View (cartoon, helix red, strand yellow):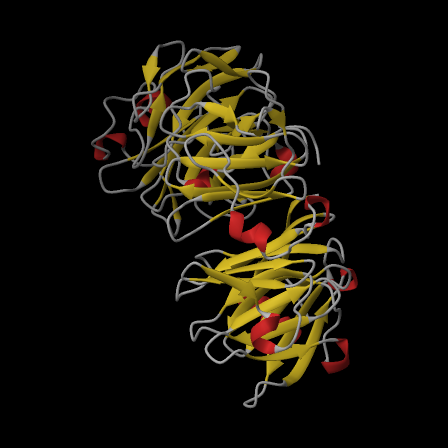
Length: 493
């Protein structure tokens, strides 16, 4: 893993107030390679439809947030000229386009009308016959607004901005340096668009990602996990020598990796959803609970083993059930803590559930557990009945790192060595269908780690080769053979 960490504040809903934190922006450049007809843009406005409209010397450009559409005299009837200097919306929402030579066209969202032969006195927004392009340019935008050139200005949220011919300065920091700047525009969502004489178009928006690198003597190298136990509280665990707590209210960062005066490296950390408590584990110090800046040991965990400290098993999974029971997966077996009483699950079931590395719970209280080499288990804590599924039953791999439910009878498995595996259960709870998604089908890598479903119908899957984004409906259709196209978006590679 690269040094440093990107904390996705979008996911954690933080409101950072760290005065030392940089004010960061994302800058993206668009040129003829992205669909612009020219690298020179003359003016930008935004319509009631939310689209951006741009005047260029080679036609009108409309941008929908994804692609540029160019209207010119070859593909558009009614456009008087390609050479457009200015544009603006009238009070009725009609877009007017003007050339440097007095040519005038109008666009009502459907069709264009050439007004070269129109008596300009019929157009109430024009005052006389001179400087038609300037008058059209002053009509303004239906949404958003122009950012004055060479003038100190405030964006809609009050943020100071200044655009001159060589730089864009936001909040007293130079965000973009360029020798060809000619104007700017703020759209309805607060994104800044800067157009140039010969370098295309720049999009500037505030970053929703805060970059934390080595700061205040704390190294973020080899970051392994990030979790939020409570609002405005973030924990970051490293592979070596750091367990960092970030306070989103104050912006303070502290490393709590000292136990009994010694620097410790935790192998596993987790938050208890019941009360937001934070726990950490290593073979050397056992299981600990963060309390008032210290890490007192959880005695019941160590008492289950009755062995010397170096022989403690590693913790690989934890889960707090709907009923409040805490399950802990270790290399030696599965532990359950019920109302303060802790014991091995094997003492209840007669079977030792070794190397459990992920635990997921269904709405009806069944636990599904992925393991390192033993396939998946289904466990019913109500009566301690269980089932095991392995490659002998239809799985593509016995090494399961994560489980996602598309439906109560449809499970997606992230495997360590065989990509994605979808299984469908029959009415009796046995595997009736198993499908694989491999690199040959579009995966970045066969070694997967997590499957995270968002609120928009997408699955985020991270792998040894990067992060992938799938539309869940399309992924299921592909696995069922209902479509030949797997829509995969690579987020990072």
